[in-house]
Image (cartoon, rainbow, N blue to C red):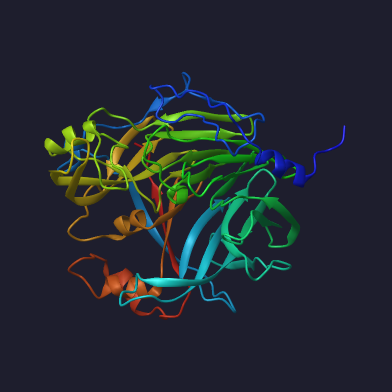
Length: 445
């Protein structure tokens, strides 16, 4: 039988679909079919006995909790080697495999008065060793200058690193460049992305997100076969308030691939055959997922707010980090909530906010909330967690900081508590040097 051509695959993908399965009221996420998606095999979503609720407790403990285990280990400061011809001013993504670190970096220009404000000029992929030395910069060729580098993903089974390029708002065809672990270009594929901005690999299959309509902002995923033909399936929330999926996450743990979306209490494991709900972050007293972008509250959220109980929501940077040893997810908590009723069903609110990290020990099955309230003074451990971008297989948390940011920390001792050795290191840094990585080994608890 002849193989379906990419053009035919795209025509099928955009074919009309008139049947839509009913979403179960018990499921926060549901598989749905949209009118402009094909009536082709959609991969199933499952919720079965493997689902684990990893919420550690009630929000009242997040304010003055003295019982959280000491999960933070020592912090190693790792300066990255210079990258000739490209000055990394921001790190968008960090992946680790064995002794190698894969970094998606961005050249930046000043975007405001603060060292934390910048504009991105261009991006590039790099391979470093665990000692900070440079292995290679991923060279790009035969890609239109009108296409932006969107993201990077690691295919651990094939030992390859891939970069995705896409011309926003112009067409749905993107370029996928694949390299070996020494930085040599192996393949240049053209495939269908449709507004993708995240991707990952599982069992040697590419997975990316897809949004079939500018009017329908429900997050969805697509699995590509080994010839990069899309086998679409849709994962969305049966909610009247949809948000774009720019804050969603596809994160690898070895060759496992996990997906989480903003406002969701479910963490899905994605496979080439479908997806199943692996972890649940749900406590009836938490109200996770109850606050929408339009600043309104659902009935359950209004009750929680009236009682001045935290209403957390999944936040970005990082929205999800997973390794074989640990799982971390960031939440934004709200308290001192004030509510104004605008109509019978709409309530506007204001609140104080703080950040919290759910830490789940995948080996012991224990959970805790870490650094739930910004401390009076950040130490290195707190800075590492706050800016975490990667999580190695051995449980090493990896974050980045630019020399300018580190010098800012050193010049504000009222906010940052750094030891003399760290302060000496920061003062000797060249302001134009490459970013510095903080590596912190998490402790099992």
